[in-house]
Amino acid sequence: MKKRSAMLLVPALALGMTAFAAAPAMASTNGTTYEAQLHALNHSGGTGVAMVTLNGNKVTVDANVSGLAMKFSGNAYPHVAHIHDMGSGECPAVSADKNGDGVVSTPEGAPAYGGIGATLTTSGDTSPKSALDLKRAFGMGGSFAYHRTFTLDAATLAQVKANNAVIVVHGLDPASLSKRAQKEDSSPLTKALPLAATAPALCGPLHPTQMSGMPTGAAATGGGTSQTGTDAGLLALGGGLALAGGAALALRRRLVKTAR
Ligand SMILES: [Cu+2]
Image 1 (cartoon, protein in one colour):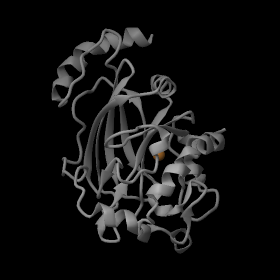
Image 2 (tube, rainbow, N blue to C red; image 1 turned 90 degrees about the vertical axis):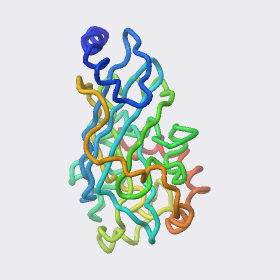
Image 3 (spheres, rainbow, N blue to C red; image 1 turned 45 degrees about the vertical axis):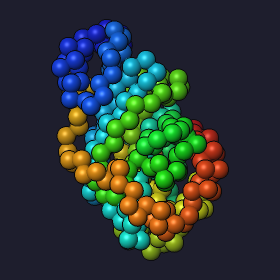
Image 4 (cartoon, protein in one colour; image 1 turned 135 degrees about the horizontal axis):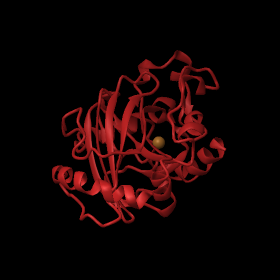
């Protein structure tokens, strides 16, 4: 079934793939593209689209997002993002806000989208260990483009193929949160970051598509590569880098546990 549908998609993909800057070679049973329409969570006001193309154990992720929180304490906002999996392959409803603070936190949404299968970093490690690495975050600022090819672990790869993977982009404008939520940290993920920094802002389940090519939507603004002011922004977020690394180790386990 999978192989057959992939074969049928090849002509369409071959045409569209020319739009990708680094189009991977088309293998006979690979090259399947999955698309996620990214919708706002927690009233983030953002939107976007992500395209995920598989080639063997390599994955190429292209995304465009816009309308997210632009600044944190006057600096470009670091938005982390992941391929979540092993949940229900869905985005959470407002009712997922179990503690009633007006925010569906990352763990509260886990029954819907699962734990972290891969972290969409800009360089280096892409495992759940980098989940809260703000320096290599998915993108900086309110609108940006993302492009990267990396090796996907077997478990996450299988989840994508099973249509049980979800793209989640994190990071809310603290001012948009309730007074109570503004005072909360990101426990149990990490106490080093405020709730706003890790709460989901965009979400979209990945599904196979015959469409291919660069995602439409926000034009690339270069926000994803701009590092200006980043360090100060990270400090403003709580200087959580060092702590976040350790905290992230337990992140996937906790999220998956929550999802069960
Ligand atoms: Cu995530």
